[in-house]
Length: 242
Ligand code: 8X3
Image (tube, rainbow, N blue to C red):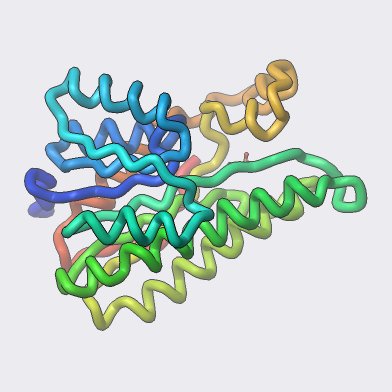
């Protein structure tokens, strides 16, 4: 081992969208590494299941049932937490894969609100804690859809391109506060992602992963763990994983 990795014991890591998929895998990986995971999800039953899994591995978790789109509620709940060392902005989704002219406006709103505004709101609410602590690490989960736009990806690709750009500008603005910003862009990962995108259509969801071996949630979680435990002066800025 060449790098002196950061020990996550006594560190607090907030993960959004912690109840399922990548967020759940990240929460478990960080708890395994000794961090106290502040698990944020709008589905309390998912948080209860996550808590059971984390307790099984003798990890520590604080459940925060909250919607990333509700800034006032977020602010109230995050203000009560005294320290956040790592923030994993994972909450996000794709809805539909339709040509622009027939795509659903409600789907667009939900994606923009969750993937872009949600990320901004959570980061903004966490900011005072990291600034007071004079350090912090924000890890934004983007997507290869930010880098290689595809047919019918329209607004989903747009939201992830926004995450890419926002990560870049956050990194510049927050550097004086010693806050690192990493964007991790996973390609297709076999989670509930496609089932959500295709609104429960299992056939369509399965077809997404035909003909290649997709990433698993654990593959991405391991990368988050790696980036999140680098020494304070080392920041992976932008990482694409397929
Ligand atoms: C997930 C990657 O290719 O399904 O963000 O859009 S893809």
